[in-house]
Length: 326
Image (cartoon, rainbow, N blue to C red):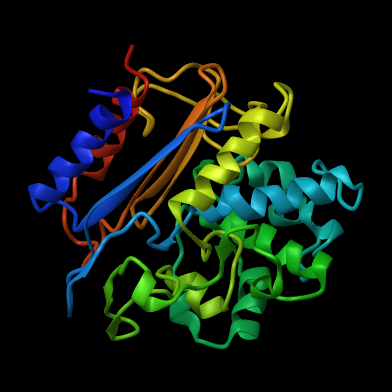
């Protein structure tokens, strides 16, 4: 049995057990060899559609690394922003009514590394559906400071900075080759039977804050396994060891990405030179530079509801361990 066959087995078993409707596993190495395989259903409610290797997925927080981190670092490399400058260098109106507050001191680099006091989650969408009003809300809200945690607010703010730099909304920006801001519902993995929008979502962003903002830096990207593997293959062959996406900002994080730690999503067998990220909808990408390979696991684990223990944490780790088994 090949390494890919072994790694695919836990995904197939999760589908067979009814833990998730379906999924796609993809692997690629630095020589360009790749494998992609699908199993199960892209949608089961209200009708059933098969999962295929070409199914489009709502990539959720993979948007942070596949799009927003890449765009922010490109602006920094071009000299248009300083990563150690505060966000107000681009967003001067951020918390403008209190010049001495902590929010106005937050830097681009701190947001990339989730080294800020912003709350982990916040239901921005409950404050209305006008995207301009909600952007003003994000910029003027008095955020409650807490311990540094992984926070969508960091990347929502980075997305607002990108909109100022590019002078257009995020959905008007080029999402990257093979990616898009929406997908044909007949070709997309369904996500949730959403209680806010009152329909099963397929091909439109699942994240409620991103939907209400009509584009944001923390979520909203769609893509296939092939597109993600193209991205990973490019990183394997062109990213030098000192690149910022590999440069630690803390024990667990680089600029945008996660590093391996005990219990992390990539399993226990990846090398120390691995970066990875996951998405709430059931997606993930891991790139092991020492071993010269990458893998993506894409599932619709929240279809038709997020309120179910899909076992995604255990599944991701099991797949990662088998990808990296000797």
